[in-house]
Length: 593
Image (cartoon, rainbow, N blue to C red; front, side):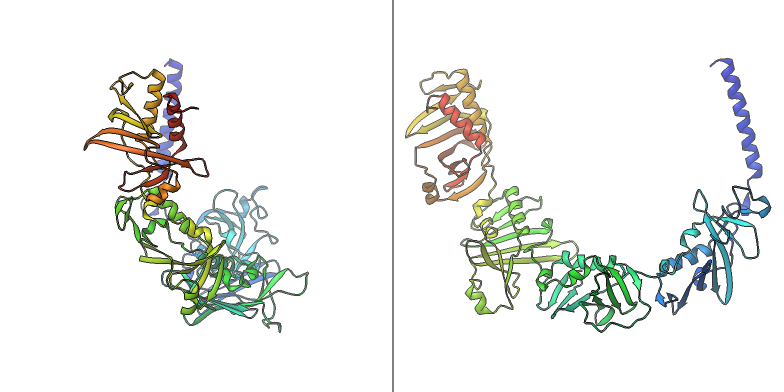
């Protein structure tokens, strides 16, 4: 550091020291510290009984009666939160700066403060029998501050508050223009019109259920959309008279808590094309108008539109087990580590991907038709639902509502749909036929798709049999191969065979397709016709792993059989294995290209 820089730093340090000393001498200490001057020290917010705001020739009046605020001319319920906020701000006003009239300038005067006659608002209120008032001007340019003036004074006062933002400009600013308040607690929703009535009730878990015209499950998303539309609707016009029109309402809605009606709304669409609003006779608001945002259309939907079209809506992570009851009943059960296990006539690990696919299939199922409501025993018997050919039972547990169980019974079907019964409801519904086809009906179709796992260096030999002619090949520790006559394979042959055995050791089925001799025959698999056997040294001793090859499926994937699970089990092999294995046979000269 040179002497010049040191000199300037010394001067700067001296100046800062002086500033600190001056600040310590002028800063108040003790009780005076942080005590701001309140403009209305004796005012309590909850003691204010009425407000009058005057802007020019306009008066906006609000009165609190029996704890409820109402706006006058015409008399109308007020948005109590806004009036309570104004009362709170007035009671907490603190002075930031007093600006005497003598100190006004061209840029700081009555007009720029918003306190001139054309701009200011005079707020009057009555509290405990005492009337007070305040002139409210413009918000300050910076910060949450407002210019105000006390009555009988010309001096301006800058207060620490955004008071100007809460003083209304017209009566609608104070009116509660919500058609239905967001916090209205109701558990019954009834609407009628066009010769039909729909009754929806909410249970203790918050789930809505249809009670009329039929007692059945309801589509929660449609009902919540309807409720949200009512909550978002805003009143755009208030009729000066409360007389309802003589015309029949297009729709009427009643919101209730138990047997107590909270709000009733009668909707009418004017015949006048120039009037685009919907007029509503509101039990608490009188006759008002809202914009046509589709609410009336929702209220006029057929009752089936409010029914539950999904066969299963529970969160999939709540599912603990799925039971499939067909020819052979089995259950796939979630384990503590979130893996799955098949339990039935035999028990084995399930493939997580296949189980998730099954759950997705169930979750995506949709009712395409409500065939018969209030179905009788005879109706169920006619459609094969007295003794279904397949029953599906899904069990689970919710952290909030506890254990639950849902079911689907499958009856008669045709080329496009299958009839079903959901959760023992007295209704016959139709589902897409694919819904039943895609569900696994045999336990092995959920088996873990990974057949086995062994490394190439565990393999001692393989035997490839084509047209009942076996070819035995021996593996040496250096990953080279020799035939039964101890003749070494060339480098390319060894590499191709090594790759085929590696892919066989990590074999994962694309899809399980069948079990038993009939499935083997359908796949065109014949003993000794086309198979490979790997002799593997495992921790449990020497074992043989066999794959027998058949024809191809419509997607060009090879059908393969294994006896690994104690009975002939067929699957489709990944093309990555099939292509390598075919090329290996050609390289070894066992087949022709």
